[in-house]
Picture 1 (tube, one colour):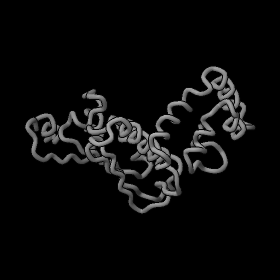
Picture 2 (picture 1 turned 180 degrees about the vertical axis):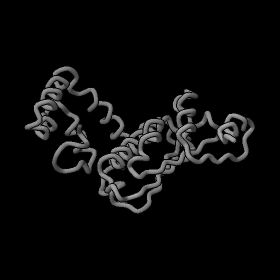
Picture 3 (picture 1 turned 60 degrees about the vertical axis):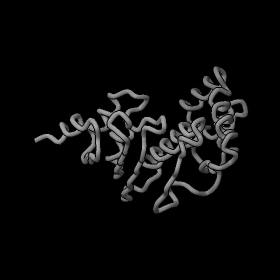
Picture 4 (picture 1 turned 135 degrees about the vertical axis):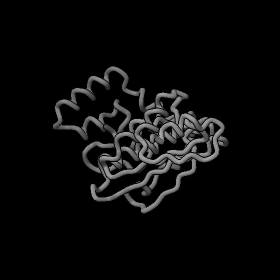
Length: 191
């Protein structure tokens, strides 16, 4: 609700936090005139007004404004985002989820329908991010998603093999390089 509220788009962490702070009623004001969402925000604001705010405030404080600025998926022809899971293990999963969710929002709502987009996620197993739902659904938005991992288990979210199976089942192209356990992938080649 904070990211897709009517009016000006969020461009800074301070603005996002302002919208997530349900005690200041900024977000409620943005949804004025929408009775369902006003009622939901009023209810949620009484129940846990700072729960989401506190989680994002902690993450954004660690990032020190590095997500602020004018860059977005909307403004670039190509982007490369390196998330170093080895050097920054404490915040990389949160950042990965942020970029994946922002991309899904871009693909589903902000991207012009005629624009075709390729999203490549290398070493999915290094970051605790679930791409399963996005992988299965963005095709209808003219988006192709490629994922890579060291093994079929490396693309499984939280080591849940059924997630890897869902990604592999939805894949139209599978490339297999050196593998010490190729049979499960080779079996997907069919006849």
